[in-house]
Length: 198
Image 1 (cartoon, rainbow, N blue to C red):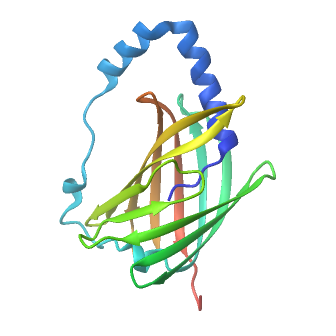
Image 2 (image 1 turned 90 degrees about the vertical axis):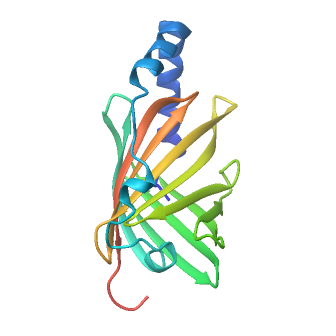
């Protein structure tokens, strides 16, 4: 669900490619071993409230505000987005229209499906294989791989989205971007349901 742009990812990947070539594979491998660390899992949020439900939260009109950071933490882009979700049974469509601080606009349309176990899968035109997500308590974890073109070459960037529902109308979304297993950037945004009739 995260909001991002191919241009932002391209600049991050190009920066990473330069560092990879200058620092060498050994340094990168050692960094991965030292920085791997532990991370939270969905089980950590099992008893938290409110309980996140994708069909009810991403239904109707929403507005998002966010930023893209490179691997050093520098903010390289800011944006807002209009989202519209609609569902028919277990099938949903989520349209995301992005408006960036440099004037660029972008649209992504997700086709979503709720599975019998309560998890979700999704596809979009620039997602290389089916996305998968599941929730516990107020948290939802969504993973997918985005295909972008960098200097005529297609790069696959792995995104690990964490959505944390604050109340009935707001959530915070943090997405980590990785290439070759190494963090190359992060996206942070707040998503709010619009009040009034949808």
